[in-house]
Amino acid sequence: MTGDVNASVEAIFREERGRLLAALVRRFGDLDLAEEVTSEAIEAALVHWPADGVPASPGAWLMTTARRRAVDRLRRDRTYAARLALLQVEVDRTGPPVFEGTLPDERLRLFFTFAHPALPEADRGALTLRYLAGLTTAEVARAYLVPVETMAKRLVRAKKKISVARIPFRVPEPHELPARLPGVLQAIYSIFTEGYAASAGPDLVRHDLAEEALRLARILHRLLPGEREATGLLALMLLTHARRAARTGPDGGLVLLEDQDRSRWDRAMIDEGEPLVVTALTGGPPGPYGVQAAIAALHDEEPTDWPQIVSLYDVLRSLAPSPVVDLNRAVAVAMRDGPEAGLALLDALAGEPRLRGLHVYPAARGELLRRLGRPAEAAGAFREALELVGSEPERRHLLARLADVTR
Amino acid sequence: MKYMLLIHGASDACTPQEWGDYDKSLRDAGVHVDGNPLGEPSLSTAVHISADGEKVVTDGPYAEAREVLGGYYIIDVPDLDAATDWAARCPGARHGGSMVVRPIIEYT
Image (tube, rainbow over all chains, first blue to last red; front, side, top):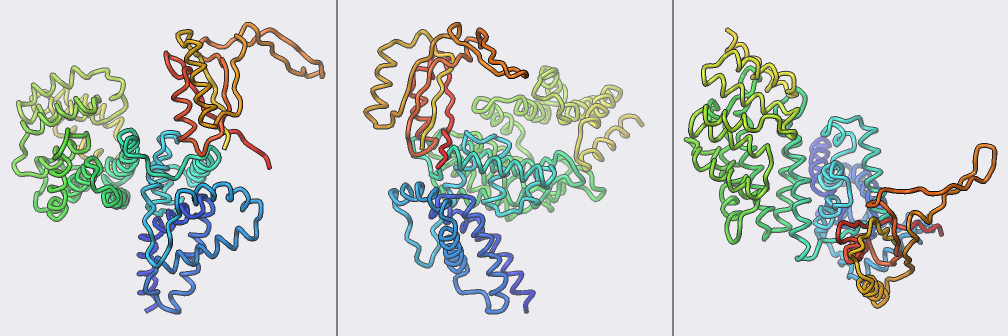
């Protein structure tokens, strides 16, 4: 019985922590205080709920407890209170939300604060994971493969800038959104790609991380239902994540799209993502996330429509040019017109500084050379890719390919 | 909340009229605290106390033209977004110049 209560308490915390923190930041204007009393309220719940049962409105219970702790803290610490009083005036002027039972959702402000252009890009995803997804500092450190102390220092530094330089907790005005929303989307997508491309480690996909990113994208989509790029981002992640189970074979190696077992694709996720792509691409010029979502949707179809994928990469290239897009387009061209055409495009990217150090470039070249029946050159490219690859499944795949061309 | 807006590498293309208009807009908005142009780098003098406790005065330093601190404003606004909005309106942000916004730390 106690175990059940604990499990449901855990689930509630995961969901409520970010909301609670955001509401407290809104109320007191201070991230440190909000963080402190959020933790205290959760600790109190861990003591009371297993004994008294989970309250009817857990969010309200936590909020009331946290607010009481915050007021106590401010009574005890006059200097702190005086510093906050300054902020308080401004919070009040913009009209504080009245708290009556249901928690107002103030998380959108935090999404924008954590993705503020005045913060280092590398810290934005970390702040979002820590405070909106509610991960512990140790979990965030694991996500970015850095020591806990390093991550703790980065978070402290970022929080100090928010507080001392006073980066506001506010949702940008509609006219500012086009400049600010991409930063928020990028912060979430960086979490997804970190989990997905798994730059190092034993797994191809770190599912927990990809799923945290999905959870954040869902929240953002709910908060900004009319923003097509937020819809596009959610669709892109759903339609990519839908193929996760089929991307690794029984031997733990990467499985390329054409060899994937379609029955292992997540139908429910595809069904959820497809209508979102339509929404993302309707009612205005397409954005880069909408187009990438459409490309992902075509990858989820059988047979794969390579000509259509190539044209979408052309659109993407005009919206958000990058050598990585060129690389993906070259692979799609190879699938449409044959390996020779793709290889010519890849060779044109040789020496591109932004592809240097990425295993995907030599891996793609090796694959096309293999298909062209040029095993010696293919082996060279696979060896080059093996020097750069981080994740174990991709390494296995490349080793198998290398064995195949050197047989 | 006070911020210093540091004006780096301001271009000669900015007219006195533009500077005057900007200065007036800060005052009209009630955010102006202070602000001055600084003498050119060749007029600057460096001072430090040497290891043996002597006052040492030298000519310079000379920064790269685009990094020269040419002047500053101190403004009082609610938050960083408001401060960067004012920095963006400054003539010093245009024609290849750039602004740096730094919070002023007040000890109470």
